[in-house]
Length: 167
Image (tube, rainbow, N blue to C red):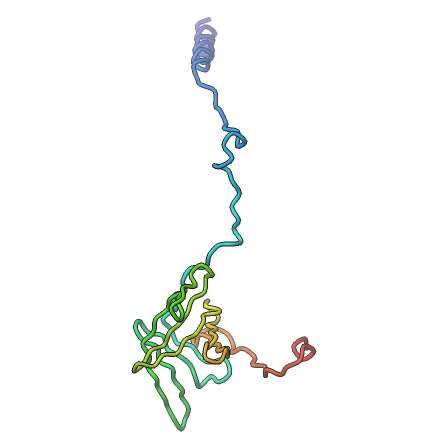
């Protein structure tokens, strides 16, 4: 009889304690539409690019490439007969000719040497490729990491037809 009265008292205490709890109220989004507005995630502004310090080879000529260092870029050409190194200071920002392109998410690479500068738009910057558009003539320059595992990409001439690409 002692156990049943003990169990009954625990049940009674549990019921009394549950009556003192406040109910959970979930706010209705219709009451505060400004707090629950939808956000368009497709229109995000792309942040400024950061170039990874590494050695990259040109897509058309594996003897040519660029070595990105902390404060300089070395555009090089290496062959058995010749070796050329052109060192440039560089700046990556979102301005070109005094106009700010941050709202459009466009980043630029500016190579500077002896008062002369070369300007590139950064088109692709990831672990597989660096792709730039030279703003002097709108030509595209691609570079691939020199230490990338696997084989070099297949280089197709610019006049390749769609049928040749499919085969």
